[in-house]
Length: 261
Image 1 (tube, rainbow, N blue to C red):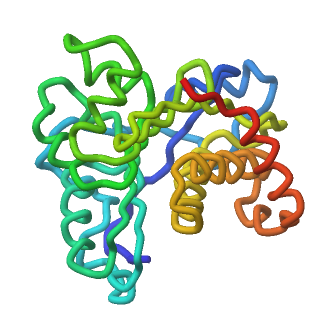
Image 2: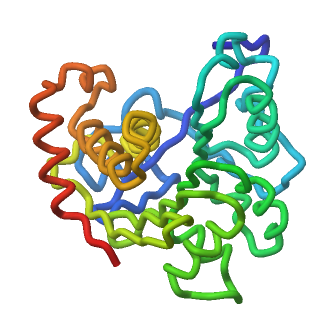
């Protein structure tokens, strides 16, 4: 954690719809439509620009390589959350100088533009896993293909072993480059209380599962169960109260729902 000398407004509003899409503007109107008063934390809120497509600029809230504690370089694996392109690229290079050999990365839609093809190729090359939304990758492959399986194979050909695409209609597509296998993984059915941060629990669960089993399919199932539990929790720390028996039962049940395409 780094304390900055300047004050930053890091508030962001996400109003989720039943299909998982969201809006980032008009919180007062959104709460009014739900017949709830807007929270005080959003009073005088002005939507800022969440993303930009300049590959050479860094966001104020993005970490520098010098911000990383020394013991991070002793880790055997790392996951890079969505950030600006420059930060993801530099951090990946820096942590490879330590013991980190397994790196997963979730794409930020801002840089997934057709004109950034070569730069994104370099970013993906050497990753163990690359996670991306279908809407973002469809834009990235505009003019090349509209077939989701061809997109996954194209990303794998850039030098990444495992590709995970979050489908617009729900669920995920998992592609393994070495075997050329594609799996369709449905969402685990739960009562959703938290959509926003739960998706990041998938990436952590995938990476942990991969280090345990070195099986991409099992890793994806681990990730889905992690995401499902996070969706049920309003407080992130509530996840740690889950019973091991429940986790194992969900793993087995969810694996049976996966389809090889």
